[in-house]
Image 1 (spheres, rainbow, N blue to C red):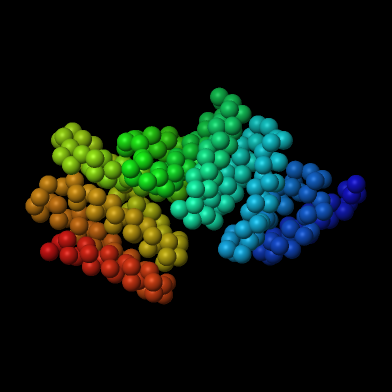
Image 2: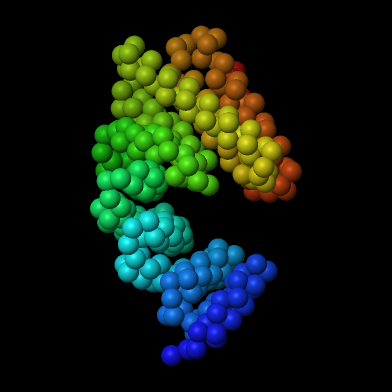
Length: 307
């Protein structure tokens, strides 16, 4: 058994290495003491995940190790601490899933594992833990959204508002989501756009009432993505800004499909063109030649639709 002074000194040294961004050095310091307490194990697991995030292509084994440690923490804690460890485990499982190609069946298996953790964590959170429920609803919506996007179109269930409603419920408690608020809002906007597009694909001549509902949904998606574009413009790299602008352009393309023929239909396409022009400029600033070519091709396609 390691003496307490050794473990305390190792924790101090590990935190110093983490502050410097030396996550692999922190892992080496923490490995001998990770079984001495929850704090040591948590720092060890976080360091494994942080080292993986630095270079995910070459450090895949580290996320597997992190998942093992987070699973241990989740299994042997209770109450709010258990929810905290569930969040860490879910994030690590998402990281693991994203190392797989979309065509890999293990991708869906990874998402199913996340959904199992969510069900388990929700049962253990208690009825009075509104914040925990909001956070878990966000993760559930995200996993279901990813799973539907992966599923072949012929095998998908009919369009449903289930994911939309889960995001909306989660966003009623933004404090519970913390730094995940922007991601949840983007997820909601994309869910609204996907639902509208799939509904249009299965119903080429929707009723006036359904058309109004879809226009309302797309108006909400546009507003969310406009807000996120504004935030990205001031706070995030050019590549992130470009991604948000591409989402906004997609919103306007879908909105154009909802408009009846005539000048009103052209207005959303014009907005999509303007958004894609900013996308091209953002990728030029980021000096991403491949992304520039793809964005330019999409911009030209939109301009053709305007003619």
